[in-house]
Image (tube, rainbow, N blue to C red):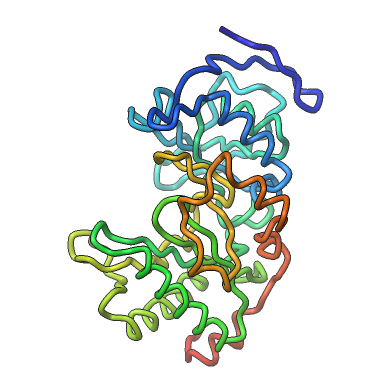
Length: 302
């Protein structure tokens, strides 16, 4: 069953709106589409001008999924794309760039649950706009461990006179963004983030690790600095995640980080928070900082 819709002058068809994507909760594809259209004013500034990697779940969150980098042949002509040659796959990849609500609705109609933008924009691909620390818990670690590590990250960054902005991953972890002037290469930013991550592990060696091999991490939280690389992505702020409850990656205030849990924020519950607090992640887009002084303090040569 198809339904023609018009969103901001874009007319296209939606299909199978009653298809359940979250079996435990009964949330449908129609509700996913509605979420992305409603959240578009908050989400689109964080996606605008960035190549997107998408995760599609055509038969729901417990069925087969796949990453989509290359835009499909049937992409509407009004959806913006960006072509980039991938040395790894030795081919041009035609990335989708989401700049308008209709694009989000069309993608959600393809059962694209997750939105993963690059850390750099198409205007300066080799120079990221943020340094990121991804706190990724193991099965045996607790969310309290994640919080304790995040607070040490914040204290370290505060001591370096760097402002940082946390968000839930939408799963069990936290993402910490440090917006920077985009004059540093990915390699330079990764070098800085590696030193920060290593220092955090020195402070909390019993619960934090930078060990890359999953089976070697034990019950520790992985302090991941390796996402600071060209083409690597994290789930966007306000992206839905393919987990029971349909959780949403949500920005937090540092002073509330011990009081909330990631499961509190989903495609239904996030809107009152947005109406009350607005986009807490907006500063990530304009609060540009130099890493020079911080690197001098750390003894890091970029």
